[in-house]
Amino acid sequence: MSADATDEVVLSARNVVKTYGGTQALKGVNFDIHRGRVTTLFGENGAGKSTLMKILSGVERPTSGEIVLHGETVTFQSTVDARDLGISIIHQELSLAPNLSVRDNIFMGRELRTGTGIDFAEEARQTRELMQRLEEDISPSTLVADLRLGQQQIVEIARALSVDARILIMDEPTSALSASEVEVLFKVIEDLKRSGVSIVYISHHLEEALQITDFAVVLRDGSITATADAADIDLEWIVRHMVGAHFSLGEVPTGYEFGPTALSIEAVSVADVENPQRSVVDNLSLEVRAKEIVCIYGLMGAGRTELLEAVAGRVPMTSGRVVLHGTDVSGLPIAGRIAQGLCLVPEDRQRDGLVQTMTVGRNLTLASLGSFVRGLFLSRPSEQRQVQASIADVHVKTEGGGAAIGSLSGGNQQKVVIGKMLATDPQVILLDEPSRGIDVGAKAEVFRLLAERAQAGLAVVYSTSEVGECLSIAHRIVVMRRGRISAEFDADASKEEIMAASGEAVVV
Ligand SMILES: Nc1ncnc2c1ncn2[C@@H]1O[C@H](COP(=O)(O)OP(=O)(O)OP(=O)(O)O)[C@@H](O)[C@H]1O
Ligand SMILES: [Mg+2]
Image 1: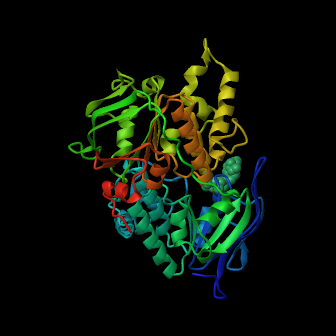
Image 2: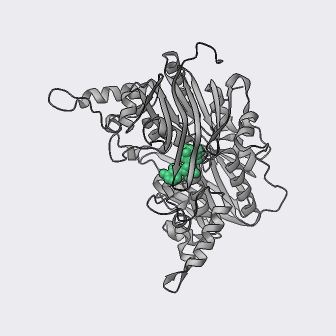
Image 3: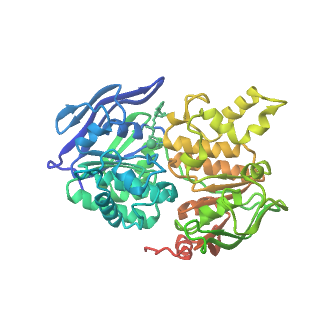
C-alpha cells in the first residue's frame, strides 16, 4: 500500500529528545503514525526504538519536544492517560504479573464491575473470546507463571487488544512466538487495519516485519535516518540503513577436525509439568563433540527448551543420564554443572537470565564469581577486567559495567546473558533461542564469537526455531519433534527438508 493524499496522520512525535543521565537516547525525532496503516520502526539494539514508543504511550516523558494527537499537542502523565485516548502498547519486556491468572492480568487496573463487585464471569468470557481470536488454547484461570514464554507473549498481546485501542504499538510482539502464532497475529493485524486501527510494529525479524508493513522508518543512534514506502524497499535497504554498511551473516568455518565427545545425552526423558504421564522429552540421545556446533531445530513445543533445561540441571529428568567428558553429571545441581563446564543460556532472560537489581558488571560475572575469589575476597581488578572483556566480546552497548541492567535496551540485555555464560569458560554451552531480540549485526557477532570459541574447543548446542540460523551456524542440524529427534542433517541440507522434518507445513 502506498502513501497518498488520503493518508491521515493520527499521532506524531515532534522534535522529541530523551536523555537518560549522559545517554541521549533520542536526538530530536519526528515520527508519524498513519490511520489504518502499519508503520514499522527498524533499528539496531539501543537505537532508541523502545524509548520512542514508551514516550508515545505514556510510559516515559520526553526531555523536550511534543506529542501531537489528531493535530493537538498532548501530555501523558502515565499510560492511563494514553490508554484513555486510545493508545495501547505491547511491551518488549513482558509486563505481566506471574502470580496472577491470565484473566486478572488482562483486566488488571480496569476490572469490570457489577453492582456489587468485580464481574469475574464477564472478564473470563472476554478473555476466552480474545484467546479464540488469537487461536490460542489458554484458559482464563491459568496462572501466567505456568505458561511458556510464547504463551505469555500472547497474553500480553491479548491485554493490549482488550482495550480496543485506536493506536496499537507492538514492540517485538513475536520474539517468542511460533511461526503459526505469528501468522495468526498477522491476520489479527490485517483485521485491525481494516477497522482503521493504526499500528506501530518493531521487530528484529526483518523479513517477517516487511510482510505486514506499509511504511518503514529506520532509527539509528537516536535519529531517524531513513523512511520509505514499504513497496519501494527490500531487506537489503533495511539492513543498509540500520547498520550503515553491507554485510552478511557469514559462514561458519568448516573443514576442521572435531574433538572427542564432550557431551552425551543418554536416553533422557522429561515429564510434562501439566500432565506427568506424558513425556515432553522422550528417551532422547545425542552426542556433541568438542569444537562442534549442533543446532537443534524444531517448532515451539517440540521439547527443545525442556531438553536443554534438563541437561543443565534446571528441571528433573524422569530417566536417562547426562555425561560430560565421560563423567556422569546427572546428579549435580545447576551450579555443580557450571563448575564442571556445562552451562545454559536460558530462553527467558527476564526470569532466569538476569538479576534485575544488579549492575551490568555484576550480571556478567555472577555465574563465574568462583574464579574471582582470592582467599576470602573477591578479586576486584580481575573481575573488572573480565567485565570489560565480556562487554567488548559480545558488544554490549552500555555506559559501563556500573550501569543498571534495566537501563540497557532489550537486545543488549540478551547479549549480557550470553556474555555471562561465556565468562564461565565452559566446555559445553547450551543456548536456547539466543538471538531473540538481537539485531542483525549483533547476531553476526554472536555467531562469530561462538564459531571462534568452537574452534578453540567449545562444544555448542544451539536451539532455534529459525531455519536460516541453523544453516548459517551449524556443523550439524538435529530436528526435534514431539520430544524426539526426527531427523539429522549436515550443514548443506535445504531449508525445506529441515522444516519438513519438524512437522512444519512448508510453503513454497
Ligand atoms: N531507563 C534507562 N536508563 C538509562 N539508559 C536507558 C534507559 N532506557 C534506555 N536507555 C538507553 O537508551 C538507548 C536506547 O534504548 P532503547 O531501549 O530505546 O533501544 P531499542 O532500539 O529499543 O533497542 P533493542 O532493539 O535492543 O530493544 C540505549 O542506549 C539504552 O541503554
Ligand atoms: Mg527495544
